[in-house]
Image (cartoon, rainbow, N blue to C red; front, side, top):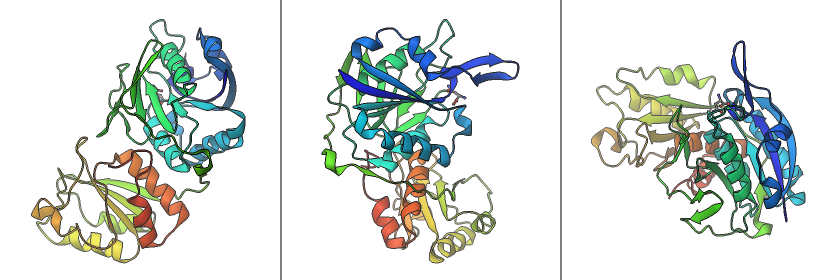
Length: 330
Ligand SMILES: NC(=O)C[C@H](N)C(=O)O
């Protein structure tokens, strides 16, 4: 029987109604005890790492989760991280970069309703996550939620209330789970155990700038003292205003000074291509401007924090950015 470590971090799944609203209060042990059938699948142990709403989850907590997994890596066959849904896509992406080529699955899950709610989705999500983590064919970082298995770099919280909270963006779901049956849509290449790579540093000076009509390019100057990288969410497939030259100047001087910029789109699906319209093309081949193609913004944030935690050399930043990791870009 497989040994699975469940790492509890909080979220709605662990929440109770208090005077000020829902807040995490239930332990991982109590959550596991609420779900029938776990003993038939695996031997489960629980580590209570923190108990927070994922709104309060930051890179320092991503590193704590990463450390908990790496410290226990040799003693378990798989890991389930209980996590709030609001920032789960960021954490799943961050873990995808911090722990690469893991033959042992690292599964994130949570719920839209607390475990104690009579109509909760917590039991099935927890059960199916453990089932997936204990399956021989599972590997790498993923989200298991509402019967879907989504690669850790492709998740997005798309709905605030429904049980179907997560979608897999611009990439097929890896599998679906119906009751206790895993139906795989995608055969993952299983990494060789000796190829496991883990990283322990992040640079959190990464900012997402969404273009809106009339936003001022001076924002780049205001950001430069605080951030090393900007992720620019352009219009459509890659439009950047050219009614004057302010954006061109701001963007070129940002990258020419050695800082990082990754260009993406604010449209949720199908990705970015700066080369299509005149309003993007001049940025498409300028040295240092990174093209995000079909990556999610959550993954770009985590990837740049990981890359800038390893290097500040522009060529190396580009090399790592364009390397496909856990299906983050095709
Ligand atoms: N459904 C949830 O888990 C939402 C909660 N606010 C969290 O992200 O921690």
